[in-house]
Amino acid sequence: MIITYQFNKELGDFEETVLVENVPLFELLDSNKILLFVDVHERNVWVWQGDNTSTRMKFVSSQTALHIRDKHDISFMIHSIDEGDETAAFKIFVGLV
Image (tube, rainbow, N blue to C red):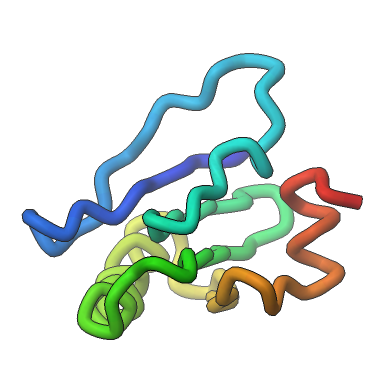
C-alpha cells in the first residue's frame, strides 16, 4: 500500500492526495512540488523535492515528514530525494526503471 502526500506551502504541511488507479507514480513528479510517498509494505517514506521549490519549503517539508512518518510507524526509514539526484531504489519505486 502506498499513500501519497503533497506539500502545501500556504499551510506549511502535507495534504494527502488521492492516487488515480493505473497512473504510475512517476507521473506525479513535478518540479514545482514536494511529494511524500509512504510505502507501507517496504516501511519507507520518500520525500521527493522538485527543482523549483524553495529552500524554505524543503526545510519545512523535511520537518513535517517526521510527523507523517510517526503517524504511520516510527520505525519507517525517511529518504530525502532531490529532483535530478534520484537513487536507483527511488526510480524503481516510482516506476522509472
